[in-house]
Length: 205
Image (cartoon, rainbow, N blue to C red; front, top):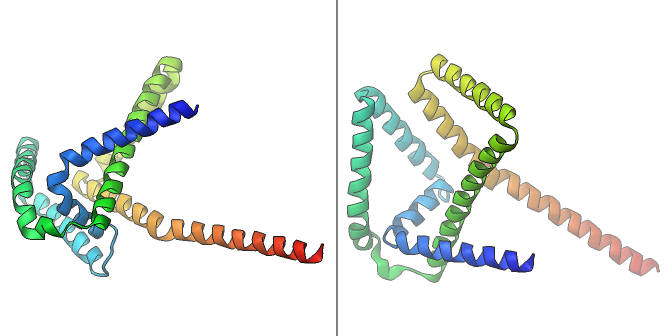
């Protein structure tokens, strides 16, 4: 068991180091995006919601075809992949890279690797369900896809995508800003209560 855990940890570290190497040119941009997504400043939510809303409004106004939209999106990715590594050090200054920033960049890459592993795990479980319980697999897939198709037919697809993105983002923010602090606070309170009980027992006995 310990050997398997060590092997998994070593593999995770190797995948994280490989991802860090591939994203090294995007380091400054990733850190800035991380700050915006975590709402470190009070005005970051307004910038984020305004930018996303403007992008969706432009897509709605231009109303591109599927082929044009995919082509423009891939072209934007190619331009970003070429320009960002060249311009980011000049804009942000790579000589100002600190140990704290490097640690945060390492955490982001590690979280990305864990997310990729989680998605692959879900995908494997889906195929395991197909092999072990094919009837349940096909019934689940058919009902789920039929429900999604019905919702997509009732609501405008672009607006639905906008709402899904907003809900996912706010769910992540609530998890990071509300649920985790409350959980930690509850754990601290329970720990303090336990310590108080231990002290009282020692005093009494």
